[in-house]
Length: 155
Image 1 (cartoon, rainbow, N blue to C red):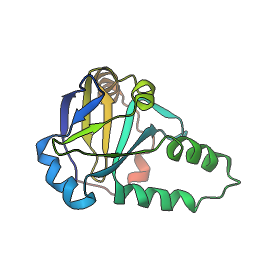
Image 2 (cartoon, rainbow, N blue to C red):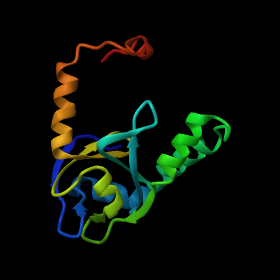
Image 3 (tube, one colour):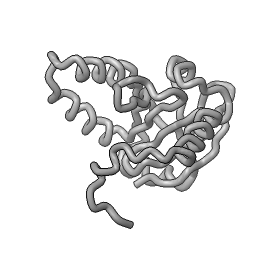
Image 4 (cartoon, rainbow, N blue to C red):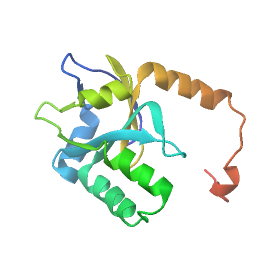
């Protein structure tokens, strides 16, 4: 399970150093094999400034779920082309670094400063500036849309 936020700098080659606290778990759960792709929002459009990073076994679950969607469904096709089409396998090296493909870095506007956000079974990788904008949006937004979908959730 991945949780927490880490500020990270990409190196000149576009690699990120995975925080030490995640490395052993990633070695155990997926042999350091991961998949990075674009993050999508509820409209199956790219989430500006964000990528998703999955351990390979978690990514395979996503692929299985998507493979069961109708090929005739317009949204399913859009999701398949966007999410699966942009997916790239990557391996964490012995120093705990992952190379983010240039195409995905450009898509998410990632240059140097990024934020790695644990999301239980995956990570979100954000352009630091986009993360701060989104975080402020979430904090300032009084929108209760979708609240009823959470049901009797309590903490």
